[in-house]
Image 1 (cartoon, rainbow, N blue to C red):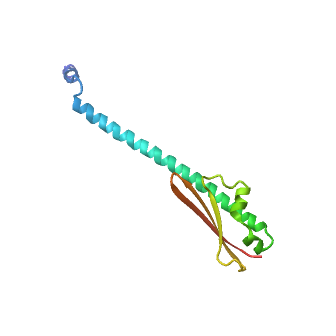
Image 2: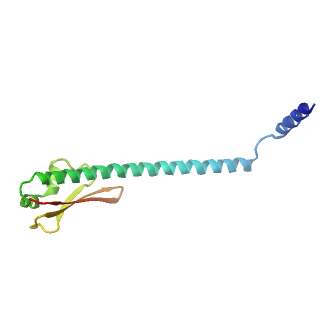
Image 3: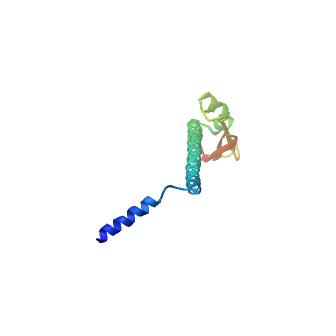
Length: 138
């Protein structure tokens, strides 16, 4: 008897609900829109971060390649007299957009030689730069 009474109340509850009102539909659509926009913004941000990570990895590998080539030189004057940006272009180290490699020395005649290698590139109107430094002696 109790089960039959409960069943009647439950079915009456569902039968009386004829659908959602326009206001409820608009609120549900707004909540769904906010969720979709959040997911899209997260996706765009992840893609941008991934591109920057790739670019910075390539830039660091190019700077390391330049530093390794410097280690192959027998004299410090060979290092300071080389145009490293031209050398990098000749060895196809300009794969990033508008990539530029610059090498700076605190004192070109010093031994040990303080070397700074800057790799700069531009992507989406943003100027990016990676810098590596080392000390070389002969």
